[in-house]
Length: 280
Image (cartoon, rainbow, N blue to C red; front, side, top):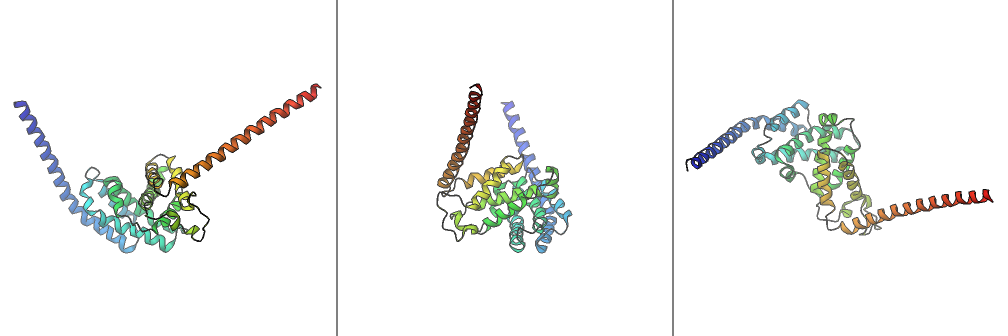
């Protein structure tokens, strides 16, 4: 009986300590929030990060709450929405052909990805822009990020390339749920009526191509790519086209193998005929 009472007392003490710790952290975060908000306001007002040291300062504040992400959740919309709107508006303004777009978005993505690591992606992506027209923007941005690979992963992390890819993949994770046939928002085939329900649109093929590449890499991009594919390939308009796409791939591979076999057989027969002729 006494042992049970001691256990209860110990558990209550531990709960009190946890409550006390969370209370202290909450008060501490409220003090830091003013600093954080000031740094974020500066980024939003300039529509870019003008001082890279502010990114490191923001990240150092956020990283303190790795195990208390719930403290940040009430502030996520205030942080995430303006930052993602900068990314969206600057893509529209500059286009993805410009190298300047990566210089602008990479520091911002470092901040957004820091929130993902602290609060979890499900909490963060709720505040990503999700207009139908954003799908092509996100794919074009991913294509731009995908074509600029650094030599080492360390450099990717320090410059924000990895974070930019992860944030863009998470953006696509939201956007591939658009309640329309993706082919109808693919401007590359806007005036092309030849695409059937059994064919994948170029936009879908681009997404699948990028994700396949990331699935073969180590790190968070593999996870994000898996999330995108899981949503993309389970869309109602995907099964028929996707099935036909891979059947055709199988047929093509099978045809190549058969042709190779026939060629080898002919070569063998040819060699045999030569030997017979020589013997004769």
